[in-house]
Every structure is written in structure tokens, then in C-alpha cells.
Length: 238
Image (cartoon, rainbow, N blue to C red; front, top):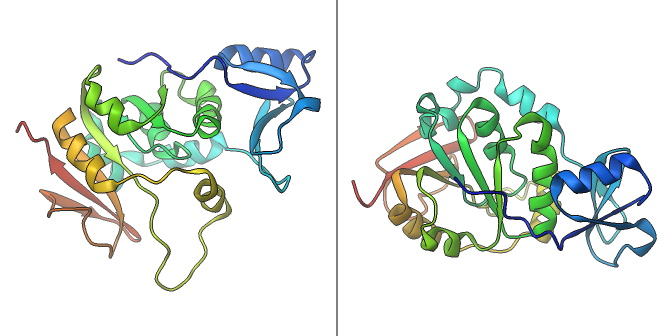
């Protein structure tokens, strides 16, 4: 399984004399610099041991462990759990991790999970949330297609959750998704799916809006929820 592969050169900002800030930076293997040196772009700050993302407008955003705890209640019956066959405790790559909610939930349930995210701020914020609730979650910061092509790690399931396109009725996404949309890099879902099918040992699970067409070909099967659908594709080797 992958080791945590976040750059030790990445910087979070806070009180460099505060023991909680020092401890968190050490746990994340990142540098801690004075909050007086924050850059004029989105960055991470630590206050009272809590890591927050600060946008250019000064708005602060943090991830909550309670969200994972709520999802764990009855998780085995969820569409995601069934699509990933969590009863087998598979090795899972959360390939487009985003805020990491699905990947960390899978890890907290007992699956062996690597979360991949190309934006360092997001990857670091995810890892901070996982420290207490799912400490065995692994993280890779970089291009996921290149990561899958390297083939250094074996996965039973590769999970693809690309950001949904704008809702046809014009409904605005949640604030967390708006912030993610401002930071996130665009991924070619078809290329990611093709690469994942070659890299996985068993299946690729693609999350879609319930009435959204498949990412590419028709899946082997699908699991419908109230608002989302999980399309399951069998590995190319099967």
C-alpha cells in the first residue's frame, strides 16, 4: 500500500510557538510558518489545532469529522458501500478525492484507501481530517492518471467522483462545492475511466447524478440512490 505522499515542502500558517500548531504540522509532515507571512492566495491556517482553508476573500472553511461519523451510521446499506463491495474490505483508490468525504468514510469503515488529490491545499486539509477518524487512510498529491499508469500499487476498486456539471435547473451547489470548484483542476473523466479500467484488479465505480448519462459506455450494473447513481465497470482484465 502507498505511503503518505504529500510534499514536506508544503506550508501551513499559524502561531509558530503554539504546541498544537507545531504538533499538527509534524503529524502532517508539512512546514509551519508564521501567520504574519500568509500569501495573497488560498492557503491553510491552523488555529487551536484546527486546520482551515482561507480563500482570497478571507472566508474560512474547515472540514468536519462529524460528517464522516454521521455517514458511518448504516453505511453498509448505502449505494457507495454496495458498489465498492465494502464487506470484502477492498483496496480502494479514491482517484478524484476532492474533499475526501467518500474516501475517508470508506477508510473509517475498514477499507484500505488511498486518496489522490492534485491540489496540495485540499489534499492536506483532507489528511488533517483523517488523522483522528481514519488514521490509516493514505494520501497522494499529484496527477491521478499518471499515478494509475505508474502501477506501483494494486487496487481492487478505483472510485471516480468527478465534480458534477452545473445543475440544469440552475441550483447553486453547497458552499463547500463552490470553494472546491474554485480550486479544483479539471479532469477528463473518460480518460480517467479508461486508465482506471486498466489499473484496477476488480472494478471501477463512477459516481453520477441520478439522471446523468454514463461517463462512457454502459456500465456492467448500476446502483441508484435518491439523487446520485453509482455505475460499476468491470476491470479490463476480467
